[in-house]
Length: 104
Figure 1 (cartoon, one colour):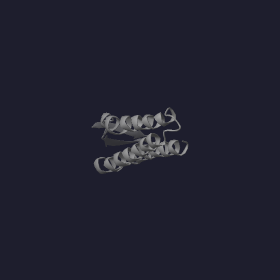
Figure 2 (figure 1 turned 180 degrees about the horizontal axis):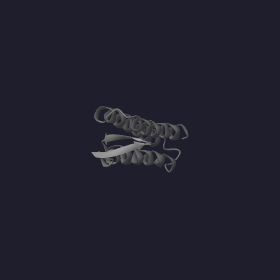
Figure 3 (figure 1 turned 30 degrees about the vertical axis):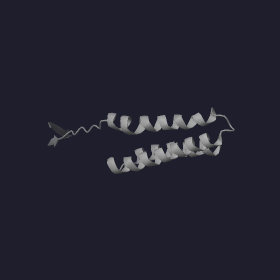
Figure 4 (figure 1 turned 45 degrees about the horizontal axis):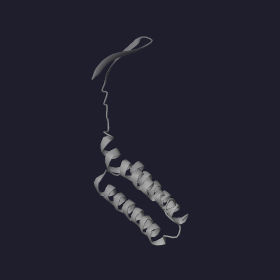
């Protein structure tokens, strides 16, 4: 709390103000959401190094990554507060995975 005096030409007004500092700890979000999402997207890129004729392996890897991202995003919605940046990042990861799956 601070106390200051504000003066205008000839009138003096006393003022009282409060500074509130809010901080969010990002480590939980990074460990629980962002790092696993990035690793799942990197795992979906493995499809491009698999043999083009091994279709069952490519389909199972693509399906696994889509289901994992879906499960992770539903778990994040249940555990975390309702903020848009978590949803946007998870949706972006899912879009990347689906795009990579369509390109095989």
